[in-house]
Image 1: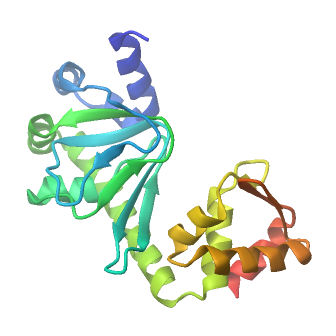
Image 2: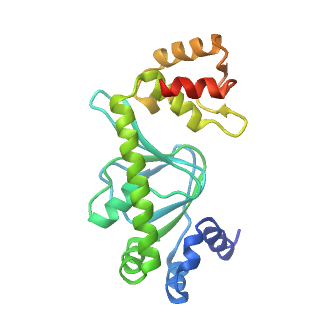
Amino acid sequence: MTDAQKVERWIDRFPLLQALSPAHLQIARGTVHFPVLDAGAVAYELDGECANYLMCLEGRTRIFRMSEGGREVLIYKVGPGGTCALTTQCLLSGGNFPAQSIAEERTELAALPVSTFQHLMGESAAFRSFVMDDYTRLMSGLFTLIDEVAFAPLKQRLAHRLLAEADPRGVAAVTHQKLADDIGSVREVVSRILGQWAEAGLIEVRRGAVEIVDRAGLEATGRK
């Protein structure tokens, strides 16, 4: 794919860019670059410098912190068409990245250098509106996640995670360990709960995946 084709795909993925003035869009076109991360590659290290405003074109990254006991605590994930709330916060405040970010699969990003981000934030009302509206939405979702992690029962968190991971066919291509990491638990506990749900006919456990058989039943579990 040529650079010009990559730019057009970026604009298609993020229609807000079409609202920029010709001059501002030209600046964005001229400075954007398109890093590609292989699965497992690091997007940001803890306390790393935020050098770019990142917009996800394909793939998915996970943003997390490690507890003092060495357990991974998921904060959120970013998929196609998404941006990273913590990266935005980092760029707006001038601080460093307060978590870690890795690619869960091959991931293609559009990256606007911090200088371009700051220029467009100051000069383009359309760009500024998008960034702040998107940031507000992401932060609202983050607080919802915090409430869930802090107060929701384990089974409810697991049900929500499965529903979020499932594709249109109802298949969540995740391991028991990955689910445990995502909800702040351990694999043995997650495996036991999944076994109970399989016996109840809610899911089918496969190698490296879980298929949701009774979505309504699992959703009801997630509301308890």
